[in-house]
Length: 251
Image (tube, rainbow, N blue to C red):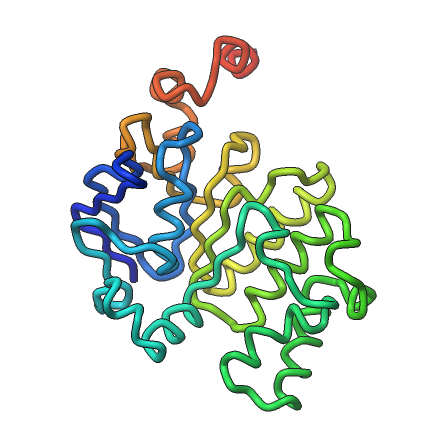
């Protein structure tokens, strides 16, 4: 489904992605791991078509995604219908007057009539158990509530791929547990999941394959999640764990 070959990207001359090669099959549950600033969020933006490679090739469903092609409204619209992006900061994603209009925005952009839009919004409200939020102002919601609305906004366009950037950040344990179980069910239903996370306690539940970035902005490891978590030496090498974590795991 996703093919990335020799991709590089930089911000004003500062390397963010360094010769990335990655292949993701439909239905996989992938975790992107690594220290801050290693390139995880940049890769998610590239997969979602927000940025384009400086060099190398990115293909989605065997079609190359380039800056030029993303200028084609029809092509860009089709890509963004197939790949949904849940931003790390929910406030970045929410901008409408109430929750109903937030969730309706995507289907309306797709050209759905209002009867179908209303049906799609109600399905998402029900799926995330947020019917009571329907007429709430998004900025008045808690962090966990905003995260649920952000996910509902993405699911309203029924994408094939769900991309999440640090979705556990700022959530209380109960909401984290809800989100883990929800993501597991989405993956069982056939959705491809790509999640950037630092949460070593939950990553094994939301992924079966882990991509580890290092401080050189390249992929240091690509292996089953459980195998990566067992490699304490590798995790310490990229500063994902310290001696305290190691001693706790040993106990």
